[in-house]
Length: 307
Ligand code: COA
Ligand code: MG
Image 1 (spheres, helix red, strand yellow):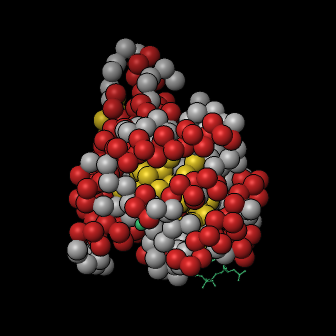
Image 2 (image 1 turned 90 degrees about the horizontal axis):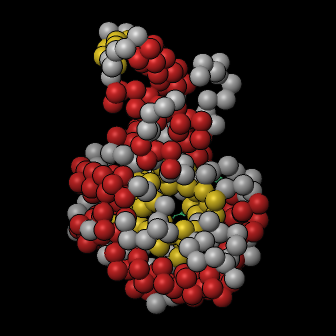
């Protein structure tokens, strides 16, 4: 394939990110047998105040095991305004983590402060500057208003997470079934993340015994440009991975689009048609990007290879 495929190929795929309360050894050990794209051992809001120190110890002791299980390890630390973020970061920064996640970001300046702290911890741990990636939560009105500046504030950032619960709290609005109250924030974050070349990752779906509800919710997020979603329960991982992976039907169609376009080019034409639809440059770019993504995710395995 000769054509530019856009930023998709440069972005690491992270579809499912499993939260595990950082003070729960049983759940952390159980997580090691699961296959999300990332583990998020949580030191923040799933851990009660009097368990914070214990969670730090329990989590730190299991980071190597989680990494060995084959998914990226991205602990979520307490936010800057708690006064314990630095202690959390010091407990988890090391060679086995892929990155850290930080909640309740307000501005790009917050990101620069966190990045400075990480640089110092990396230096002390003998790690290369920038080794630790960053996954900030855009879940305050201020951060949504600054979504692009936050998303682009540091080369450490691989993705930004939308937190609907904290966002609606900060806005002083109710969370409703149809989620209309999140439309602007999700749109803003989807566009900002894309413009900054990072992943938009969607808020967890709390009804963990409602697979159909989760699927519909994840498909909705995908329309806003989200590339993945947090899970709070093991049963959510497969549905999330499936939703954010190209389907076999999409892959087959993309291959036919590319083949039809290559045939058109061969006979000196810049557009052609397939199944009654026009195939021109943006259409074939989309198809190529989907194939790159599918290959990166290993989804195309097992299909007859036409390229
Ligand atoms: N990670 C790892 N294992 C988990 C898990 C998770 N997030 N959620 C549940 N499990 C385990 C349970 O411990 C249980 O293990 P067992 O069979 O060995 O006892 C098994 O999966 C089935 O769990 P189930 O009984 O269906 O649910 P539960 O009542 O034990 O737990 C929650 C439900 C919501 C309390 C739990 O999923 C949870 O704490 N999730 C994380 C919440 C969180 O991190 N929130 C912060 C982000 S918003
Ligand atoms: Mg939050």
